[in-house]
Image 1 (tube, rainbow, N blue to C red):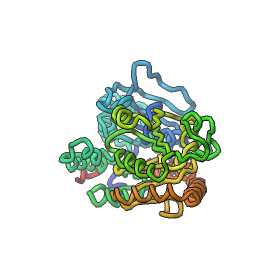
Image 2 (spheres, rainbow, N blue to C red):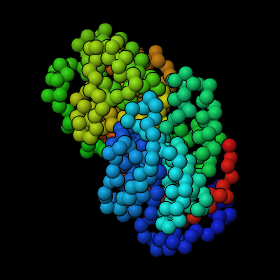
Image 3 (cartoon, helix red, strand yellow):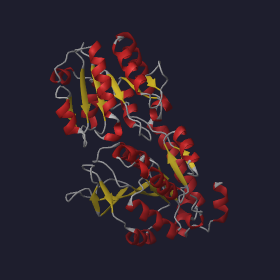
Image 4 (cartoon, rainbow, N blue to C red):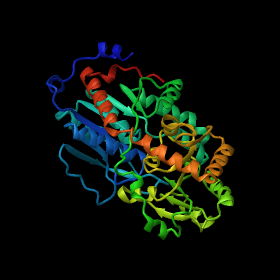
Length: 412
């Protein structure tokens, strides 16, 4: 139990004790190997976490790799950025991993120790941050944001899945707790030997993502009118996203609705081949902010065929944008949606059911519109402020306990 570690932990360094006991703002070190302007679900979530803590008056020290030669530290009240050397991730355009920086972090934290360290990625920079924090007896929370061991099967490396899973388990079990986005993932990880997992859900910005951003001009640019069925996919165009199922579902749906168009928003290694095989598809590339929200809202149906998500932020964004969703019944869809009420959910990995549900939706405009309205209404109840409150309390609890991570057994 966590209380066992609290009993065995030495006292916190004096500066940490004073800040916490005086109930002043926390100093939070957040370590990540991806952050905006990089575009992915992890970067998106972490930016929300940072902004939420800044809005509550806390100080955030953001530690990340330099994202290219021209990358500069941001200037923002309450936020200090520390940029470390990094290298591009092969096959993941625009993403970098950070090189080890233990000595630099130890030197920095000795002079100005954070109250809590949050490590979002398990790469070289994240691992060196964990080692530095343990050396200095600074409490660490980790986040399980990406299903790396599950990805291996999509790149012909499925035989490595158990080994990668073991590496991740040992990393997270060296921290005070691991934050996961759903109860289902918590159960799965705990069954695999992960300890001290806590659920921190995700929210969605319903002001940004809204049906009000539907754009007739954008639809016209796609060659469709208001009565044309537009099927959307938003996300990385990569093997682990199971895009072949989305393509097959659309092609069979098209037999019933020949005028339907398939719009894909995103970039990735599969883009060139998809363009070659499907020249009639509309490829919009990477979109962000209001432009992304406008693309979502201008569609009608959202296909989400992925089987490798830890959560799936795009599901919440599609809900908020008022799209009728077809997805598998797991991750964000399982956590928030009820089949037949807010979306159509196929049993996990049942490709045939996924295809049938997509066809069913396309043939019933009334049903489609009802799901769209219900999804939007539900999204309005998933507010980021509730998530921020939960995260803030977790940071305060673990900072107050002042747990010495050198005493935590490295369970496997």
